[in-house]
Amino acid sequence: MTKQEVLKRYFGYDSFREGQEELIDAILSGQDALGIMPTGAGKSICYQVPAMMLEGLTVVISPLISLMKDQVGALNQAGIPACYFNSLLSQYEYYDAIERAKAGEYKIIYVAPERLEIDSFLSIAEECEISFVAVDEAHCVSQWGQDFRPSYLKIHRFIESLPRRPVVGAFTATATQRVRDDIMKDLRLKSPKTLVTGFDRPNLYFETHQSIPKTDFILKYVKAHPKQSGIIYCISRKQVEKICSALCEAGFSATRYHAGLSQEERRRNQDAFIYGDKLVMVATNAFGMGIDKSDVRFVIHHGMPKSLEAYYQEAGRAGRDGLRSDCILLYSGQDVRINRMLIDDNDGNPDLSESEKAAIRAKELERLKLMTFYATMTDCLRDYILKYFGEAGCGKCSNCSNCLAESEEIDITMESRRLVACVATTGEKFGQTVLLDFVRGIPGEKLKLFHLEGKKGFGCLKDVSVRRLREILEYLLRMGYLRTGEYGKIMLTERSHDILSETVRMKVTKERKKRMRDKKTERTAANSDLFEFLRQKRSLLAKEEAVPPYIIFSDRTLREMATEMPLNENEFMRLSGVGSHKCEKYSGEFIPIIREFMKTH
Image 1 (cartoon, rainbow, N blue to C red):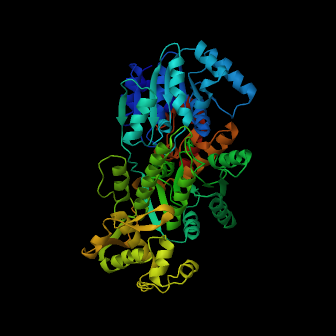
Image 2: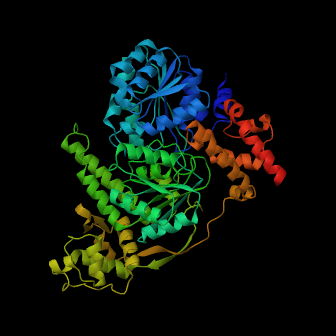
Image 3: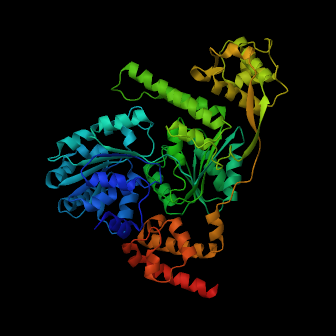
């Protein structure tokens, strides 16, 4: 079969997406490959298609148990023999899978990096020809990335131990230039075909809010989006419990996930979300790596992550099927303090020297600062993200809250000068909360303890709202007039004295415009009833086969089905995401529903 025939037969697509064909051609020609492609861009196709065309076995190395389970389930559904080796398998299942692999029953096997040095797994390498090794989540190899895993540093040993060096491919969604260099060096890639397809996800809408009642916002949002699946990320376990309880008490279908729960409860709650029994998952960042659920319509961050890499990866779990989805960040100054504490408490890799640990900590603090700028800025959010990852910005995307907001420029010179002066007056010893209480003239325990109430400047900005003062303070930090020190202290910089001779102006939001409606959604609205019937059928089939509904068909395929209304197998095969195996298996299940709908409507 040609690569196009493999793509259509097993995956149901008529053409490759941007970058996929170039990487596949390189791999098939025997060249190593490095693919930097955003979540939802189809990285897995880049190693699954070659796996079906190359002689021998393909090994996919991934740290993500959930990803392995999902992708192996999807491959088996598509008619591709695949298996995984991780802690989900019982001892019997593990050794049975090894024997099947040795017997040549699989084309693709997924394995966690920790298992590459286990003798029982190495026996596969001794008896089978491994023609291709794909390293997923390749950024984990870099100590400068947001998710460094020491086990990734040993992958090259496994590859070098093989009787014949296979083609090696590395894939990730987010990687700065330094992380890309680490991937090539630490995985020992040989003259790889390197492709960066771009980080933009046009179907994602970005929105930020500062200093608002977060729980109230989440409750209103979930109420306004019934039947939609979403993830709500929280920084702490305590916040997860609070938000999940509030949603459940309000009658919403929600569950939770964090490291404080037992492994069995985490698995049960994750399955409930993936299989659609629960619509909303409230979780810490312990959840989501490798979750391939395609119909997540919103991701809300109750608190700000430590870096834009982490935020974009987590937010990118929305809209993997290409349909319109929301990514919303709720920010408060407390988020910065919590993240600084997490950075300070992280000992990191014990093999590093103290100077290396200090350099990595400094880098993490810099990433936190840039993440804070994103959360508080008034310019285009998408433009900021793209520039952060080294791409040309988009200027104004018209699909983020800042672009859709009307803004005006105001003079904040007086407020800025007084804030800077009060930082000096109070000795650069306090964080945002105490500083703002001081300038607003609000007495508190710390102000009394340090005798600040009688100092010059106390109450000098009492007529300015706390929200506007926070915006101004964040702007001064962003522009370098002030900086944050240890424990979130607000401190002076070399630019601080310039404020005495400069006029300071800041763009602020007036009001938000109404969001543009998705045209495709408008077109399919007339057939929303049919979509619901098809979705109900998909749920029944998923329960019968014990797989997540989106593994049978994505929402995107169902929406196309509801619009195109195929009435025979040839028409059914034309749908995106329908290959020959799935057409044979499912056309007889869905076509009768479409015919009945057309009769009655």
